[in-house]
Image 1 (spheres, rainbow, N blue to C red):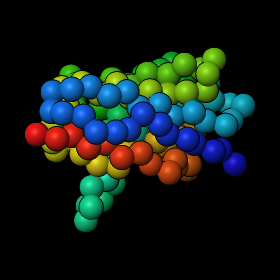
Image 2: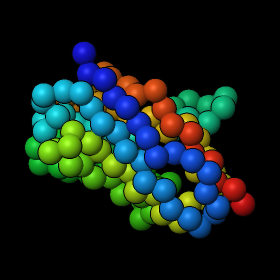
Image 3: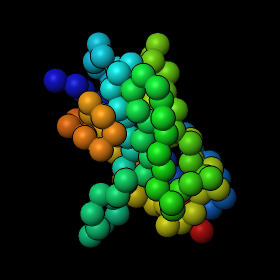
Length: 118
């Protein structure tokens, strides 16, 4: 069982930045695909970004492309989401996910709240 713990959420003004972290308890972190999703009340959970295992290919939703950056530190079993130029519509609970490949998510974190004030 993989355990994912997110951190780094909080309140920020529009135009500001936050960095989310997600640490995974797995011996196979290097090969795991890692992703970030977000959900606002009453809506489905939306894909934000993903990074593949081993080759570290990255993928982004159009809504965050150019503003958010996903990266990983395999030595720390941690994936990051650097969020710049934040907008009020980025307000959501952000979830970390892990899986054998991008698009195949079988483990989820508990979520961390990000609130962007206007």
